[in-house]
Length: 119
Image (cartoon, rainbow, N blue to C red; front, side, top):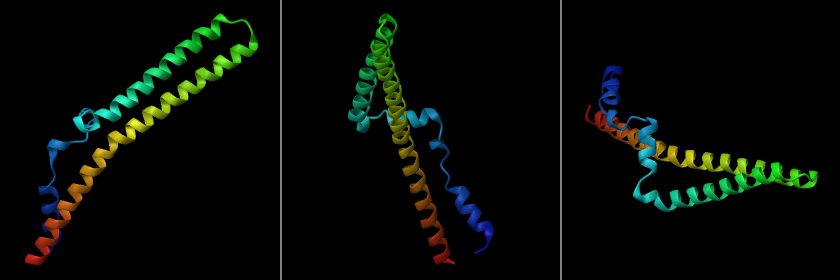
């Protein structure tokens, strides 16, 4: 089996309809199977957003340094939770793309092994 046949098999099985764009990744994430996870993520996001807004308002309204430090710490912790939620969501979004690429690789290997067996 020569190198041209291998390139032909690999290039011939590539599926352009499942291109990894941000829109396709989000469409894969927001489907019926992920509904419960999406709801939980958004609920946590809204809870910590409300807490961050509350602590930000309280920070500027109080004159006691001890309470200002407390509200600032709460605000920073809420921002850290936002980042954590975003990272977890991004990992879940990319998980579907990794699964798709593994399936493509399996199909290519199967076609390549069948071609080698037939030759």
